[in-house]
Amino acid sequence: MLLADIGNRFAHFYNGKTVADLPLENLIENYKNQKLYYINVNPKNIEKLKAQKNWVDLAPFIKLEGAYEGMGADRKALLLSRGDGIYIDAGSAITVDKKIGGRFAGGIIMPGIWRLKKSYEEISPRLKIDRLEKIDLNSLPKSSTEDTISYGIIAPIILTIKHINQEKLPIYCCGGDGELIAGYLEDAIYSKELIFEGMKKVFLK
Image 1 (spheres, rainbow, N blue to C red):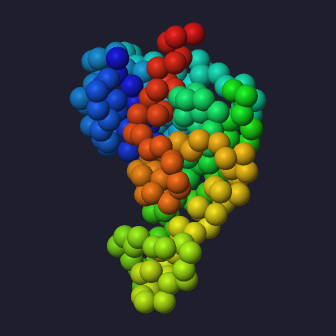
Image 2 (spheres, rainbow, N blue to C red):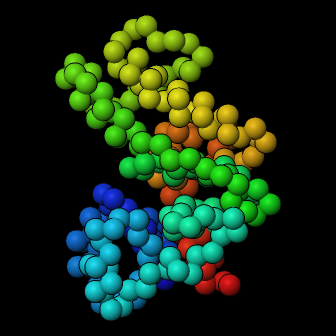
C-alpha cells in the first residue's frame, strides 16, 4: 500500500517499509500509474492531485471524535495513530494536539522552526543562523548569539507543550523537526510513521 502525506514543501511518501521526502512533481511522475492513497494540506495541490486517476484522497474517510470543521486531515490522522496523548507534528507549522478518551481535546498551531529562524533573519542579517544549537533550558544562554536565538525559539515551544500536558499524557512527535523537539521532552516518542499509522486505520473501519 502506497501512502502520501502532502504538505506545503514536500510530499512524505510511505511504501510500507520506509518514509521518504519527495517534491510533489517527483511523487506524481514516479507514482502516477500506481494506486496511491493520500492526504493533502496545501490548497495549491488540489487540482494536480485530483487529476491523478489512480490516486485516492483519504481526507473524507478520516473521522475523529471531537474534531472541528476544517481541521486538517493530517492532524486527524496523527491523532488516530495511537491512544490518548499529546501529538506534535513539527513541519512548516507546528501543531500540538491533545486526545483524551479517544476524542480531540483541543490543540494549537504555531509557526514552524524554519519560519521562526527566517523571522530573525528578517529583523537583521546579523541574526541569521544556519541551525539551532542544543541548549540547556534550565540556564539562560550567555555565550553566543546562536545560543540566545536557539533558546528564544525552542524554549517557548517546549514550555507551551508542557503547559498543555497537565495530565502527563504520553507525547508523540513527527515531522521534520519532530526529533529535535522530542529531545527536549522526557519520554517523548518520535516516529516518522505516525501519520501513516493513522491513515492505515482508515482501512480497518
